[in-house]
Image 1: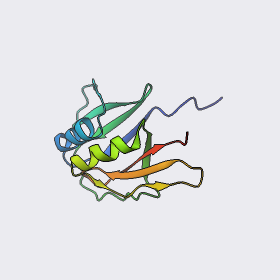
Image 2 (image 1 turned 60 degrees about the vertical axis):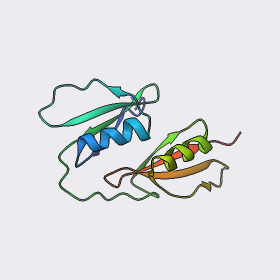
Image 3 (image 1 turned 180 degrees about the vertical axis):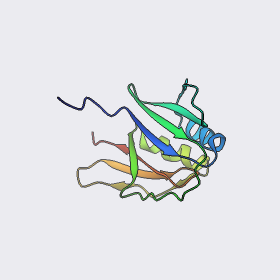
Length: 122
């Protein structure tokens, strides 16, 4: 018996359309078809197999921090991603180098959820 892989990350959002704009246009995630649930939301592809599920009608505060309560995306070129985020006026932390040599920056979505963008050394 084993867990095979991470299937999806779910985030509760206040305004689905505002979040769709952020994840589609700023994070450049491709949208997916979503089952006809009885609550608002949107689904996005994360890499080849994982998904991001946005769940609408958030009424409770978000408790997210870049050191915990975030998810991370491996990216191809952090320089290009940082320029892209800055061009979209996204809230972003300065780049840091992890102890293992990976480069990372964190960006915040419209609800205050933090997303790490990282690039492995080499």
